Length: 514
Image 1: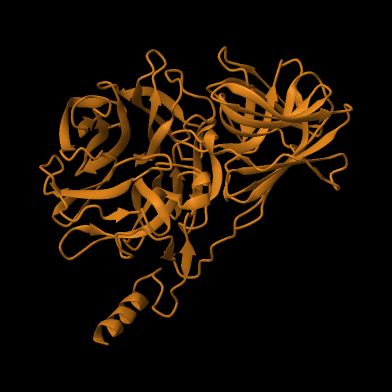
Image 2: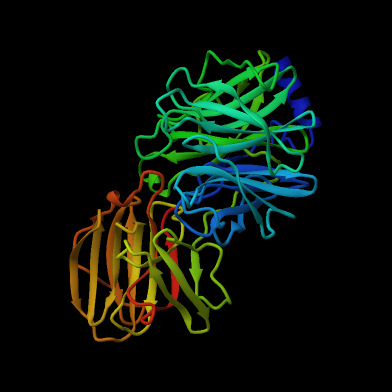
């Protein structure tokens, strides 16, 4: 009873912390839809988060929040990829330095396709970023940057040797005062002597110890076993002692298949909240690696732990009293603006997009790369595993145009119009199969795909947008469209000449379950 009384008294005295009677809860993920490897910072009273965009443009989405639970997409770090890069945009890390915001990010170098770390800067996370090129070009791969200020000395750490026949290490190097250049020689912080993997590190200091919170095991796909580990030292440069009770956070049962690779942010009253990504179990897997949030503390034994235990759970106490979690939103776009909405993403490694919006709807085409025979995809992130999406295709020509569920240029489903044909086709490993077709009279046509279990597709069409006719093919299992590090996305597609673009009046995605 004494302990309960003290807890009630304590919570009533700490600003922003709900009292024992006022505790409310939210349900993870806090950012719906795929955004792996999240980075989170606070500037005054606003929180900013970004994460991996992989093979989708624009590059590195930026979200904002006032309460850590409800987030809004506000922009991207890059609208165009930096000159030195080719693809695979992973693990951006935000850092505030001398009134500007730096973004350290991983991408493949165009000259040799090796993944290295670049840096860009802006006045704020929502302003246009200026790229400063690669900053870490080390070994056969250097990924997953993190920046740490140790009493005025800036350091960058990264994962090294992940592609070599030797143990993975977390390396570090001093940074110049402006954060744009390495100084001195890299040095080792931590070695993966257990051969379990080591990446996605986050550094902080509390009391006598420096901590590295990092991720181990397999990051991606339905067999992911990602989890969170910790090590500590009394010096930033080490040596580090690994916690005997690792992992400190894991999935495998309960709400998540796996979880890991994140950073923490401190609230104005000194509490720490860790944002990482997780795969949900079962059908939720098909929404990809989504950002989750929970409080992180240092316990009486000076080790990092999570108050809800080592098994990651989706239901967590609200960080701030008076907050209500907003429901999942549907998506509608009639393309009346001067440019595409922020929610849209496209398949930049495979096609250069041409998209024009206005009162006439969307005109979509692109110039496909030489190895891509399956056009330009314009997609959004699925946020639930149960939804349907639809469009109205205006007019016809010899290009293929309509709806898609898109993994990459070799793995996708197309429900569309092609000349005088209405057809459903599936492309797996580059091989095309026509699953269904009928004649089309050339008039405008409405198309719909209904998705269940995150991957099962049913198809319908309409001439007026009110009465829908289902095709007679059985539900199509699209599990094979999942790529190793990302899930397929629903959206629009154009396959053909840029002189024969696709025209769409609108696009809607309706979530049928929260």
